[in-house]
Image 1 (tube, one colour):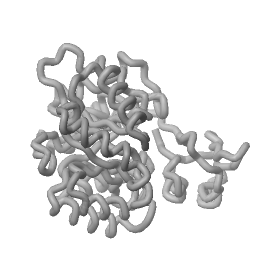
Image 2 (cartoon, rainbow, N blue to C red):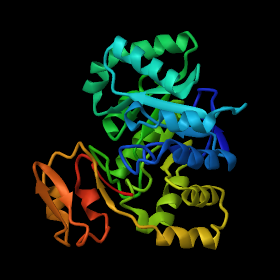
Image 3 (tube, helix red, strand yellow):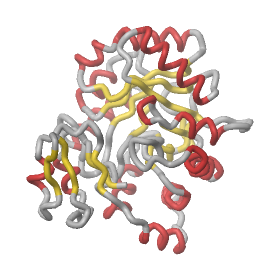
Image 4 (tube, rainbow, N blue to C red):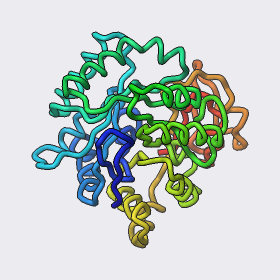
Length: 315
């Protein structure tokens, strides 16, 4: 496993980051011990970087996975707090529920524009104060939007940016993948730590897995890439790919057999764009939300590319 310094933070991270969303209640909802075993396997194979969030509900999984370790992994988390009190509560919850004294990276979650950055400034000031006190090592921002990356590139107080990047641009809220990469390059050159998310577009690009990974691994101005993993086989596959090694045939066979399904997140707004995009007529709007007909769905992922809320995933 290759390790790099995350911008100017002084924090050394593995190129592969364990994305903590997928194992939690928002997606496959693994029991704590089972989810912890998946994380432990990643750590055993050289991954030293875990990304999570208050929203994901995976603090217990991480706590179980790192319990008793003499060398703790780097942990990044985030929340939607916009007041100092809300930020304080979220930081303390993360410390308490993961049983860690110092949080390596704490970020404002899913910022959408310069306006939302401004609206969350009070919370951000709390994180900066916590950093000065040694409670947080680095502060940052996660985003699906180019505007936010561009804004954060010019903010010296932002240490880390966690942007959405995949070869198809699925999930980017305000432009193309080329525009996102230009913004990321600018931020990287300003010394920001960059770790990308959604290289597989929330699972919608799984049929082109190799091309997706080649794409993100070939970008020289991304330090680390968070990949959601829900099984030990997926951990082995991703570690092998990031190490430039052959994936064992038994692992490939097990993953080919895995039954996957379309997952529609609770924040779906029922706009109907996915319904129009689906050539199988497998989607409909029921009670203001998109619903999939499992008999008709072929898991092509086209609906995910049409969703403006990035609410459709394949698990």
